[in-house]
Each structure stands twice: as structure tokens, then as C-alpha cells.
Length: 202
Ligand code: ADP
Image 1 (tube, rainbow, N blue to C red):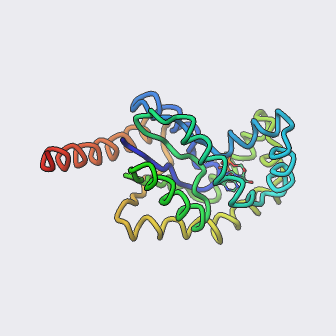
Image 2: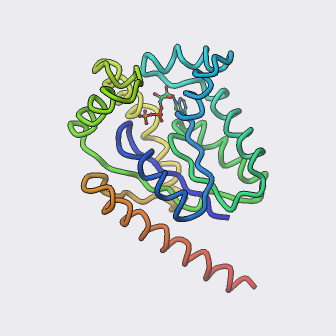
């Protein structure tokens, strides 16, 4: 199995790059943002609860998103690997994910973090807000709050994976193709290392 986390602040391009990577590497895409928006569209109780947090730029409670991820892992038992996008977003979620994967006799193999300046992020999000229909992208105060939440609660997730030697930063400014190539290069390195370890083990 190959399990990847695409990490980075709101607007760093995780969604765009995820779409390219899942088809290239045959991974199942798990985006908590997309899953939550689909719950909202279906007006489920979970969606109705989550919307209150998302509209303010706050995080949805850990137990809600962890439960969603657990369900998805169960749904895709035969997957060759997962790409986690927008999850884990707190140290607590990272610990829970480690446990869930351990139960399935697997682990996170690589965490790639897209780095983009805050000025560029605000510009991208306000631009996206014009067409995406996402209410959390139209209000600059909500966008700024999401950055504050990212700094306070999500940035520590990087430390969790740095301690496991799985973390690598990738420049997130440039063309979509260049960034995708940089991500692919890093993934190929990790896959090659995994293949060698497997060979040595056999
Ligand atoms: P972005 O990366 O642009 O912030 P997402 O689609 O990943 O967009 O997330 C949108 C919102 O959904 C977040 O601001 C948050 O309220 C909620 N959300 C998404 N993923 C999580 C998560 N793992 N934990 C808590 N809340 C989440």
C-alpha cells in the first residue's frame, strides 16, 4: 500500500494536485472538505452541524471528521493506497489516523507540504470564491480566521510527521504542471525506497 498526505494551508492547491496524483498513482482520494460539503449538500445531520463551523472558518470537531475517515477506509478495503487531503488537521487527528492505519496493518508513507505565501493564498481564495460557490471563500475575515486556525492547530501536524521522518516541503507557487512534477518526483523516490525495502525483506 502507499498512503500519502497532501499537506498545506487553505488555497495551497491540495485539491488541484490531488486530482492529478490520484489518477497517476491509482490512489483513493479522501478529502474531508469535499466529504463535509457533500454532507451539507445532502442536508444530513452531520452536514448541518458541520456547516456552522465551516462558515466561520473554524474546524469541525475531531470526532466528526475522524469518524468520516474511518467509514471511508472501511468502504475502500481493497484500495492500493489513499491520498489524504485536508486531513489530518490537528495533532489529535494525526494520532487517530496513525491508529486507524495500524489496525489495517499499514501506515502513512509520505507527507508532502505545499508552501505558498499568505499574500498569494488570500488572492487565490478570493478568486476561487467568485466562482466556487463556497461561502468560506468570499469573506476575507473568514479566510484570515482559517489561516489563524491553520497556524495554531494544523501547523503542529507537521511536527508529528517530521518526528517520523516522513515530511517534505514542496514549493507551491509556479505552474500546476511544475508543482505536480515536483510532487511526483518525491513520491517516486519514496516508492523506490519502499520497493527496495520490500526486496530486502523477501
Ligand atoms: P481549504 O483547504 O480551502 O480550507 P477544505 O475543503 O479542506 O478547504 O476545508 C473547508 C473547511 O472544512 C475547513 O475550513 C473546516 O471547517 C472543514 N474541515 C475540512 N477538513 C477538516 C478536518 N480534517 N478537521 C476539521 N475540519 C475540517
